[in-house]
Amino acid sequence: MEREFNRLTLQGVYQMLYEIGKGNFGFQIIRTGFRDELEALIAVFNVNAKRLNRSRQQFLWANRYNEVVVISTLTFLIDENLQILDYKCDGDVFGDIKQQNSLKGKSFGNLLTPSSNLEFRKNIRNLLSTGENFINLQLAYEFYKVLELKLDTVVAKVTHDGHSRFTIHSSLLDSQKDKFFNLKENESINKISIWDQQLFLNIEEYILDHINEPSKKNYELARMFNTNEHKIKTGFKKVVGLTPKQYHKKHRIIQCKILVENTEYSLHQIAIKMGFKSYPKFSRYFKKEVKMTPKSYRERSKTHNV
Image (cartoon, rainbow, N blue to C red; front, side, top):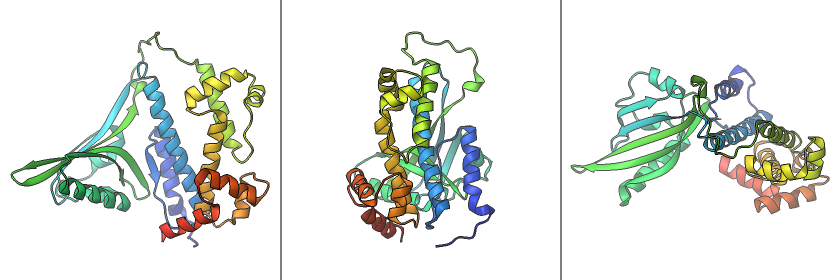
């Protein structure tokens, strides 16, 4: 399927870059039904934004004694018809909602992406039909035409005089350290030095830049980055959560899945692009990690996108 290539096509990418530049990693570019290289780029963009968001939240938690952490929140009160009765926004990232005309009386679902709205309505029906009083889920808000912001959310049911009301509380972890300058560090925390943090960041970037090559051994990475194997073996996992080999395998298969699912490249072309010497080797690797062959995975993705 071909698409007209114009500025609107790239609007989501431009807006995404702007939000990432501001430190808002929770946004995702809304996917389309196209299967071209731009769609593959968008898929890669979304995957890496998720990775940045997870890494950032892990960093904020690990350094919670030395960072000023702010939780930006969205809170709504809605009725049984899912109409907004009242709402409150707290946080700069929600500035666009604050600037809108009153949302009271409008459908809450209009703030969500179509797929998230369907999932939300399904969960509301479950709340009404069961004895549960609250649920945890992730809602994808559609504040812009081309971006979605996925937020961890708690929906609670309150019943009074035979009528049900729902409170919806969505939150986003944010950091405002630039507003504070004289924070006292807690010396009791065993922290990794800033130099080693930069070292592991450089190794992580190297792995991602060479994801279509076989993974390097720890001693090879140690030689390349002028350090020792033990530091890489222990420190990299402490910071990133995976060993270099595990990290390489995880992101290599992510890239393979993106190309299989979102492009019209032949499976043989994808195998070559991702550094495999032959398609059979690629197919065995893919099946071991994904539990299905590349061909089956592509056929399934086409079915789901119909």
